[in-house]
Amino acid sequence: MDSQSIVSILMILATFGLYIGISVYNRAKATSDFYVASRGVPPFWNGMAIGGDWMSAASFIGMAGTLLVLGYDGLAYIMGWTGGYLFLTFLLAPQLRKYGRYTVPEFIGDRFGSNTARLIAAIATIIISFVYIIGQLSGSGVVIGRILEIPSMYGTMIGVVVIAIYATLGGMKGITWTQVAQYIILIIAYIIPIVFMSLQVTSNPLPWLTYGNIVNELGALDRELGFSEYFAPFAESDKAQFIALMFTLMVGTAALPHVIVRFYTVTTMKAARWSGAWALLFIGFLYLSAPAYAAFSRFILMTRVAGQPIDQLPAWTTTWVNTNLLKVADENGDGILQWKEIVISNDIVVMATPEIANLGMFVIGLVAAGAMAAALSTAGGLLITISSSFAHDIYYRLMNPQASDKKRLAAGRWAIVLATIVAGVVALDPPGVITQIVAWAFALAGGTFFPVLLLGVWWKRTNKQGAIAGMLVGLFVTITYIFFAKNGMTLFGIKDTGAGLIGVPINFIVTYVVSKMTAAPPQHLQDEVIDLRYPEQMSYKDGQVWLDDGSAK
Image (cartoon, helix red, strand yellow):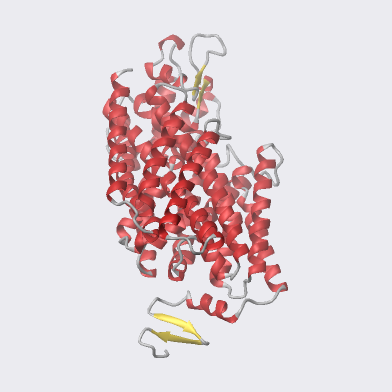
C-alpha cells in the first residue's frame, strides 16, 4: 500500500471516529430523540444538517462527473435539485411541521384518517429510501475501493458496516449532529481542489469566476476534434428529457421522506422556513462549484492525458483502471491515447481529479474523506427514515400500539441493521451509475407522494380514497415506466431518469377525480387542513380563527 492510500485511510478513519463519537455522545434515549431529535434543533444547524443530508454521493461524487460527460445537459440536475427546495420550503415544510407528526406516513395516515393510507405510505417510503441508499452504498464502495485498490464491491461491504453502527446508535438526534460535521468536512473537501485547479490553469484562486473561460476553450477543443461543443444545449439529450429530468428532481426533492423529516426536528413553522433558507445557502456552495469542477477536470484530461503515448500515462490511471471504473485502450493502434479512447465513469471524476491535477496526497485524502462524509450523511438519514417507517408507522401505529419506548427503539434499530445489509447486497452490483439510481428514487418519491402531500395540505376536499388511489397508481406507473424506459421503450424521448413527468400528473388526476367521486372527508379533518395555513399562534376551529389566548380573531 502506497503512502497516498495510508494518508487517505487515516483521514477517513479519523472522520469515522468523529461520527461515531458524536453518535455515542448524542445517543437517542427516547423515541422523540430517535425520530425527530426532540424537535429542538436550531434553524441554522438544521439547515446545515439538511445540507449534509442532501449532499449525497450523487451530489459529491456523481454531479461533477455527470456535468463533465453531459455538459450543458447535465444542468438539469442542478436546476431540479435546487428548485425542489423552493417547493418544499414554501408549499409543504412549514405546514407539515405544524401538523406535528414524526414521519410522512404518519401525516398521511392521520390527515386522511386511514390506516390503509398509512401502510401504503410506509411501504412506499421504505421502497424509495431503499433505492436511494443503494446509490450511497455504491458511492462508499467507489471511495474505499480506490483507497485500498480493491474492486468497489468490497469497499461497499466496509461502508455498510460503518453506516449501520453509527445510524443504529444515534437515531435522529445523533444523525443531526453527525450530518453537521459531515457537511463541514465535505464542503471543504469539495472546494479546495477546484481552488487549486483554478490556480494551476488560470492563476486565479476563484474558480467560480474563471471557469467560464475554460468552457470556451473546451468548445474550441471539441470543434477541433469534431465533437459537439461541451456547452451546446441538448447535445446529449433532447428538450423533452431535459424538462422531464428537471421536473422529476424538483417534485422528488419536495416529496423525499428523509428530507421532509428534517423539518420535523425544529420547534416552529417559522424555524422550518428558516431551515429551508439556510439549507439552500449551504447547498448552493456545492452546486455552484460542480460546473467549475467539471470544466477544469475535462480541460486537464483533454490537454494533459489525451494525446499522450499509451505507455507513458500518469501512474494514477493504472490505479483507477484496477477499480474497473476507468478504461483506456489504444483502439486505432497508433500508440497515442485519443480523447475518444478514454472511457471514464461519471462516478470517479471527483475522486480522480486531485490525482489528475497532481494536487498532493493531503488533498486526495481530504477528498476521499469528504466523499465518504457525503455518502454516510445521506445514508444515515435514509436509514432513520426506513427505521421510523417500519418501527413507528407499521409496528407501533398498526401492529402493537401498546409497545413500550424500549421495544419501539429496539424495532427501529433492528430495521436499520436489516435495511443496511439488504441494500448493501444490492449495491455490490448496482443497477446503474449513482446519479441514475438516485434519480429513480426522486421519480418514485414525486410519483407517489408529491400530489398527495400538496393536495393534502392545500385542498381540504382531498379524501382517503383519493390519496390511496393516487399513491398506488402513481407508484405503479412510475416503477413500470422506469423499467420499460431503462430497456429502451420510452414516451416522447423521456428516459428512466425523467419518469416523474409521467407518474406525477397521473397521480394528480387520479387523486383529484377519485376524491371528487367519493364522499368528502369528515369536517374535523377539513378544519385541520385549513388550520395548517395559519401561524402557530392561531388555530382554525368551528369555522373561526382563534388566538392562543382563547379569543376569536
